[in-house]
Length: 149
Image (cartoon, rainbow, N blue to C red):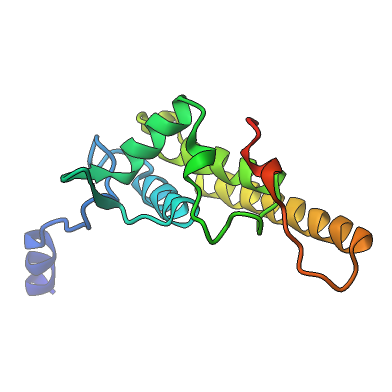
């Protein structure tokens, strides 16, 4: 047993660059990392990517575009027209709250789950409404997506 505890104590904390918050091992790092994953889905970028010859943090990049009201113009092209605007807005809202600078301002993982469930319900409702208007067609949400929330 003592060998196991010695081995455990000697392990260093390891993480993938881009998934740790700037306060490193502060509270709710799991929520922060999950927020980065959500941003990967929204923007189609990796946690650390290259732009203009420099490495960029996806979280910092998304935060800048969100504050300037232009994150909606940086959506992964695959998602354009496939996600209902209300669902997208909810998804962005939860992703941005997950990567909040202060761990105290981040939601709990349970709150994240509940908000994502809300987003899913919004998507299902929008899909259902669209299919009732245009039966037997692929549901597409065009320019509505780029309206400010």
